[in-house]
Image (cartoon, rainbow over all chains, first blue to last red; front, top):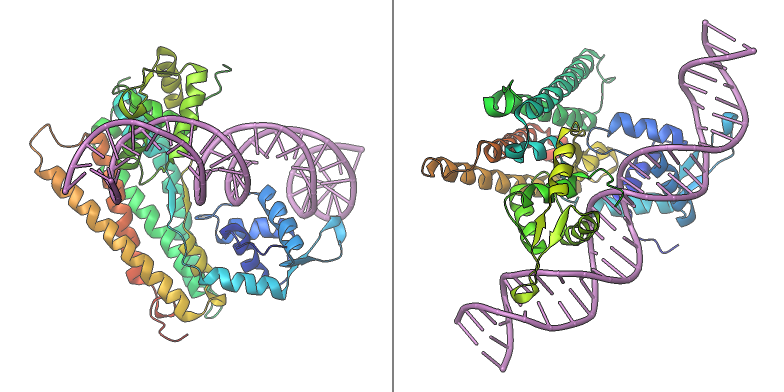
Length: 183
Length: 183
DNA sequence: TGGTACATGTAACATGTTACATGATTAG
DNA sequence: CTAATCATGTAACATGTTACATGTACCA
């Protein structure tokens, strides 16, 4: 129980547990929905962190319910750990964009290949942007007080602006990268 | 020598080696400069990958020079491995933005703390954006044929658009997140 | 002659990914 | 009855991070 400082993944699980006990499964779904666009977490990690945090006394497992559901609740120690995590300055953001790697090494990539990769990703981003726009429209249409919080809205706004920037970038790409039809 | 498919980090080292032999140290510096903004690599990893790729026959170590410099050259097998890596569709991009985590859990974060974190990151991004803008200006001023390649320019353009989007996002943040002066 | 930048490497550990094993419950 | 979904968990491995140990060459 050496109370090592939390990592961001563990901290976000504690964050979600502030609104009541949740099972590992619930946490996976919640994380995917609420922070998945800028902080991905796998199921495997969730169970691992939950076990470790139970050890450390930051969460407590409840009785198993139907289908073996096992709810975890945040403890006082967990709240404290979260509170002190939150005081630490957040680390720098990390972007890993494999497509850009391919672009940078474009001189060593067959033209058609590069163009195909670019086109594929452009389509993915177009879909994602459309999804965010739908989310925003839904949020705007929600009855007052029932839409997402300002915090969730800010996260969505980030996603929206990011995806728009990416689309603009795709659209500004020169033919060498974007247009080539030759092999 | 089971010719496992390359990971993106190893592949980018091979990418850099296309322009001639380099030492681990050189590769760290090159990677930092050319792809560091969207693909970070540590020194430790470079030496590890280099050792593994030498084992696999993708690179060959040359004679040690002054200061124990040990240049690695890409081999034919290495070129092939790179070529087939490049044909694989690039994976999805990964963004890990700890500040956004703090924002999403804003309801459980003291107002002043949140505002301070936001302000700190805004400053960081402002600096980074200014740096990119200077890079672009320098590139534009370079004598014809001596500026960065279209590929490098595309990568810079991404960085520029990304940072602008982030700044716009900061500027659009509501007072609850941005403005709070109270604890 | 002393500090800084260069240069390689290892060890230990943290985090993330993939794949699998197992079983319960629900809906059609 | 059976397929899909819910649900937990483990194992093995890949990748990334941090810290340290060691020594060289250059410059003031």
